[in-house]
Length: 418
Image (cartoon, one colour):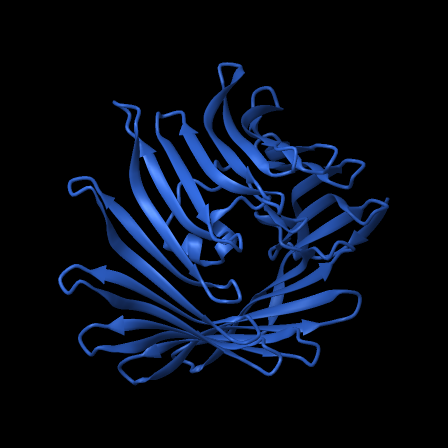
């Protein structure tokens, strides 16, 4: 193994293999829907990420340990686009499924999602009532350039404008301006709220991103924050973050981070600096020393924090990583100093298991037992797949009374494609 000294962020979360490695947090995968935005991001948002062309999702059922059950049913058009999703809740007394929400999707001739209408079930009237709507428009390149949200106005029985996002593209079809608006019902017009402007180099890499908000008193845009990106040799990238000081009427340095891309193109922070308003200079903040394996994967990351009083680096954290023969990450452990015992203690640990097709079949989260100084089970996810490779079940367990107890489960049912 080779060892390299770099400077990196020393606080959680840490970016590992393109994902955030965080302490144990229980999180369901797809059910229940949060709001219509979850559907609007792209049409496949209504489907499990693993869905392939052999099967398409017919229904999904969620069972919670608290007795809450939910179900989703899907319908498709001739092109395979999901055009209807109906959500149900199970009545705890009767055990019957009761309608809850309904999403109606429409598409352009190019199979781009053009609108989503959300209905809610009225159990007293036994009818679907309109609730929200989203409409999208696209450039000839296929990029979305307009998104408008509406809410249903029962008084007028019409859709009422609510928010709008307008995107401007350059000649390379890259977004150069994204402006957010909100509908003013009193003036009956769109009022600008925020805008993001993006610049690129000749290779199409983002070099500057600036954000502003609309000041209604002065009737002009006011700077809020910006991010400047420079690209160096050996896959190094520097990102400088600035905030706008209204009193000084100028940009103030906030944080600078230097990153490096590994052989898998994962970006890892390697230098973090704090900005000083008075001096305008950058000062040391945190760093990491990395140890890599022969495949270029990080196996040890030792974290250090800059101690201004001693003018030196002090060790603050260590991450250990394990991988299987397929180069999948199978474990991450984090340790921090225990000042009371003058030794290291566990902070969090997560292990992963994969099948022969490199699909994740288990994820286990652990916590540290200070008395025994060992890792103890906390929560785990088990995944199963259909013969076609689609996600079939996702079960979540809690460790209780020296055994795994089911907390919730999701089951996905598919249609065979003709």
